[in-house]
Length: 176
Image (cartoon, rainbow, N blue to C red):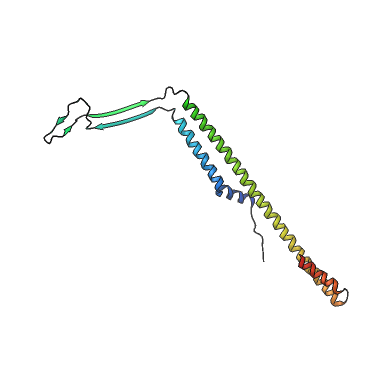
């Protein structure tokens, strides 16, 4: 016995938006473009660098020698630097604009993919609903044809109709 599957359009859309690979890919592209935008705008900030060395031989500086003959430099070298981008000919601004445009483009692509998936899921849902109604109508037609066959068979037993009517009722039931 066949029973059609019952589905919920909103639930099906939620599942499709969460699991469809084309949507997941478009979302990953948006995240990647947003990361590139953050990285491009990060270049406007000053950069602080720190470094240090120990036992570093500076050229021209006499190194002390110990009994084993190895030379050691008793000095420490610590570096601290701050660099601030002053002028770059507009390349950072262009990169920020380019990355913002890429984010907008990827977000628009995500919206298009979501619309396409929503249309596909909605179409499948409507097709399922149509097929469910067709199944229901076909069941009603089969019940009606069986009832007609039973009525005509009873009439035939009582002599109220011909065998041709019984054969027509049987053919009608088989056709459905």
